[in-house]
Length: 285
Image (cartoon, rainbow, N blue to C red; front, side, top):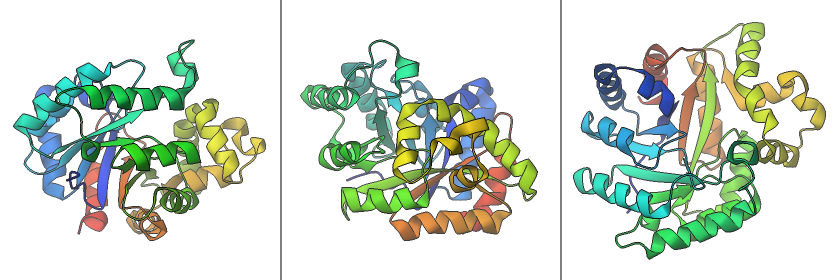
């Protein structure tokens, strides 16, 4: 059975946790658990799963999900061994998100990423013990990647997407696969300030073809990518405003077919604990 990630989770870069001290990590993870979030997603996760194990040790019920482990940098055998080490101690509280990353980040080795991902899953399945299909999801945006996610894993974990993409993804993977989408959020009601912060967060991704190609499929144009992102693009990718505005966007994803929405709170140095508390008042009640 796939780990129960609930309806809402939190997405945080792994580096924000490793930059924090050990006691702060444990305290913050335990608080997320107590606030009622179903899952904690660790962005750019390492395949040794040392950090997920530390955070699971500090919590009782929350699921730890990797969003994602880069398949070019983390051999399947090592990921399988690490998964089963953590799974034996914390049964059904670890979900492995896998993905092929991006050509500018991987370098010259980045060729035929979908074929590489399929072969990687074959390698995982050949391990004994493996990472079972029920405990892995795939980063997926386009139709072929979404089809592979439905075929070879518990479901899909799309990143930097709109609610329209969520509708498309649900139709592509069918009614039963898990659809866990990431959503950037800003607790900021001033439009100019919100878009400035959103542009700071989004501009990096507009240099990565996997994301820009997906956005073009959704009806955006090259002009929307100029200058770090048009207002139309930023507003579609980043939910900003008060708690009710964030709740409204999360509900739009759920209405479009998402089982789970993991929110990434922006505009914070380190762990965004105050934002997590404010959001929990409307998202986990």
